[in-house]
Image (cartoon, helix red, strand yellow):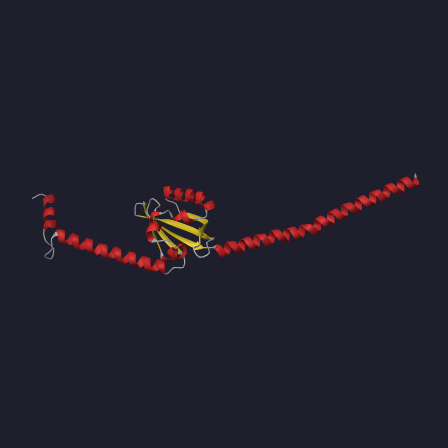
Length: 203
């Protein structure tokens, strides 16, 4: 008997009364249960987070959103899976972010951007910081995308108010200086006129 046939015979022999097929079936069943358990655990953890959590396939197509997404957007799961997640973005933000996301997916690089999503309660738009990282296998190939959307609307409003305050303050500070400069120019003109009059009087 050759070494190859000996090995094949060994694998064909029952182990603890089980054939190779039985062992493979048992291993597959355990693996499926493990994957199902970890999937449920991930979803429970994601639903407990205050941020929107999502995942996408290697090609960038979203395949999961946590409960927070549906609470904010009031969309159904089927709609979320068939429509691009950028579809509820503010129109002015859409084109640039589609490009950024396509580039990240193509090059397997982290994605980060700020954009506005429509709020179902107010009907307006809120700013979100969107981040995504590629999940890679041992060979470095992307097998999943993991992303979050964090509400930064209050921060953006505070920043806008701060910028507006600085602009107003700067204008108010410049106004007195402009007035003083104009007054100084007026004084110079008056002094020049007085000098000219005196020169004519003494001529």
